[in-house]
Amino acid sequence: MIDVSHLTPARIGRRQVLGGLLMAPVAGMVRAAGWTPGNGPYAVGSSCMLSRPATAAPMEQYLIGHSQPQGSLYLDQLISDRQATPVIDVKVPEDFPYAGRLAGRSLPVVLTVFYPTPAANPRPDYTFPDETGWYRLPHMQRPGEAPLFADERARYPLIVHSGGQNTHGLWHIGKLAHLASQGYVVVDVYHGDGRAGGFIEMFALRSLAVRAALDHVLAHPHYADHVDAERIGASGTSAGGLAVLTLLGGVDPAKPGPSLADARIKAAFGTVPFPGFSKTMAREKGLPAGVNLPIWNFGLDFAGLAAVKRPWFAVSGEQDRNVPAADVLAAARAVGGPAWVVEMKGQTHGFNEAANAETYGWEAAFFDAHLRDDAAARALLRPGAHPAGPDALGQLRLQPA
Image (cartoon, rainbow, N blue to C red):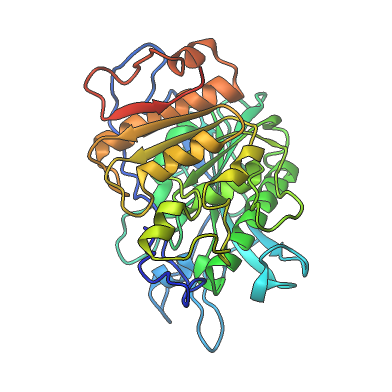
C-alpha cells in the first residue's frame, strides 16, 4: 500500500509505505483461444535459497530489510550457501540521482530465478523457514546443482520483477511461477527496502538493483546460454511499477539529468503500478501549486513519461486508494509509446483470486505479444477483443488505436 496521509509541505520526503499484492495461486480457466490465466504447459524450477531460521528478529525483518542502530538486517545474513544462491552486491555511485545517504555504499541484494523445467524434475519443493510455513519454492536447486531446463537447447525470454515497497519475493511466487510455466525465465529482486532509510533512496537502490539483476543473470554460467538477451521484459507490482517506468525511460522534468533507461527492456507490465505523485494527491494534501517535490517523480501531470516509448500495460484496481485508478490511467495517457490500461472492477490495492487470474492472463498475453511476437497474443490486445469473457472484472480503459 501507499500511505500519503503524512505528506504535507513540512513533511514531504518522510518514508512512505508502498506495498504490493499477495498473489494467490490461480486455478485454470477456460477463455478465448490463446488466453492463459491458468498455469502454462511447463513445470517450474527455482534457484537455491536455502536459509537458516531467524532467531535474532522476526523473519519478515530479514526479508524486507530492517535498519537498527547496531546494523541492518537483511536476508543475505541467513543464506546458508552464498555460492549457490544468487546474491549480488549493488553499488550506489556517489553521483547517482537521489542516492542520498546510500551514495557510495554497496548493498547485497538476493535474487530468485524461476524457469521452465521438466515435469519429471525430481527435486523437491523447499518450504522457506519463516513463521508461517506458507512459502514453497518449486523444484528448488540445492547447493552444487545447476538448473534443469525443460529444453536445454532453448533460449527463453527473460522477465525481471520488482515487487511492492516493504514486500518480498515470497509474496509473489504465484505470479512469478505462472510466468515461468508459460516458458519464461523470471528473476525476482528482494529489494530489502527497509535498509534504504528513505523513499528517495529506496527507488535509487531499486533501479540499480533491477539493472544489476539483469547483468548477473545474463552473465551467469547457469543462465547465459538459456536466455535470449534480445527478449527481455520487466514486471512491476505497486512500487515496482515506478522502478520499471524509470527503467523504461521515465524522467522527472523538474530535475533534468541523464536518463536511467535500460535499453535491454523491450516491454513492461504493471500491476497496480505506482506512477508517482499526482496533481490529485497534491490537492488532497493541500500542497501549493507548482511545488517541487523532493521525491522520485515523473511530474505532477506525469509529463516525464512522454520519454517512455516502449510498450507498457497496466492493471489497476477500481477502488484502490493507494494507487488510484485515475492516476494509472493519466500516467498511461502520458506515456510516449503504446499503452494499455485494464481496470479491475471492485478491486482495491490487493486483488481477489478472480482478479489475479485475469491479471495473469493479460500479463501472459502482453509478454507473448511483445517478447515472442505471437500473432494470437497480439490479437487479444487489439480494440474490440474481450479475451477474459463478458463477465470479466477487468475493463479496458485505454489501448492503442
